[in-house]
Length: 250
Figure (spheres, one colour):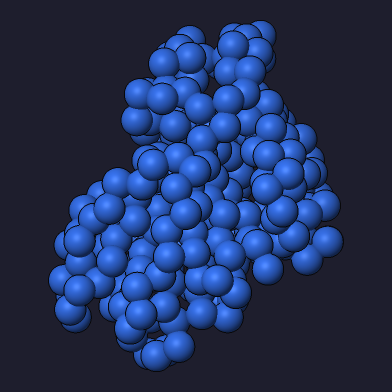
């Protein structure tokens, strides 16, 4: 089975639709969305509808910190994400907000653990930005010896960490389209990147394809119409910097 994993869609319909089509062309037969469906972008309602439909077809959909902010915008504060939380809240229907509120923080799928941020303390929204935080996250699955993979989002760049000894990992910087096999006897943590708002200087959308039988991962970058996505942000009256960062990939 080929599982396509997406994260940090951030209400970017242009990017998500393009990634979904690309994943299906690559043979994906199942899907998982690792949170942050909304926030920043111009299409929160449409994105939620897409994900609701995917869930009805068997997909796993998790909750991220931006769902929490959109559900309770009064507590979002004056953060970058909090700036659009009230707008997002009002753009969603009561049914959509209710669906978001019941999403889980994590899920197990065979040898894989799926989470938005970290497997340890998932509700604290820690960022896996280096090997030490990857080790921190893996401690959250120490209770299950069958887990060989942790997949997360939250960080808007792609990365793969491989455990070489307990609490010690090394980071691999994957190339787009590179098929990477699992290392026998080792645990792995993959940051799938952001479909809706990449921040590594490359505006192409990110997602990851996991072959559950072969135990391989492939990180993908997909060209989409980010100028149209940026225009939609401007047309919605959202802050200009949200549009500019899509065009720059930052």
